[in-house]
Image (cartoon, rainbow, N blue to C red; front, side, top):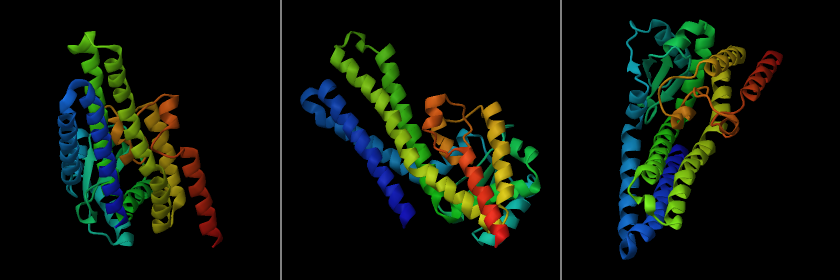
Length: 292
């Protein structure tokens, strides 16, 4: 229920942003027919909502070229998912492999029965079996906590908003309205800047607390917080050194660590909590577990 409410709230935010954009632009470009712009952008928002709900997992899989793998094609991953899921007792998720040497992982799907755990080739090469279990436990925690729908939809919606902003931006630079008045150009610039900011705020509202919770749930489920902490440190170092080469930064919140390189401002508003704090919490949890 909470996950569905969060998705509903996300859809309402998206529709509000698009209606606001339609109202602002309608007044400048459509005159007395400003309502047409509002209806147009509302229709776009509804279409994005429907596509995001039913097809966002396929969009994410396609954008990273992730392929569903059989137990024969990815035996280590399959065995790890089986081991960890024996604790969770969730519907058996499908597994997928992403053709990238950058080590990372994410979970996606509309509900637990349609969940997919995807990892890169680089992760399978880098991590030990125990560390791989820690990563899988984190991703299955997202499935158990009903995060996957919210995070997948948020990534798709954020990408759509960012794409719309880019259209406005390039229309301003290359379009026919080069001679437009300063007020019109200012409106387009404001839209181009605020739309990605809105998408960023949506992702921030969803991701950070969920990552802490998934870390804790996963670590406590397999009773090995240090294995997840060790895996996170390896992944963080590798992704800073070699960011992933495809995909949209709007979907960074799906991954266990941020796969994209950013400047200081981007890191400040990252969808992921600081790695030092995540590892610190896991180390503390390991000590508390031993003391018990």
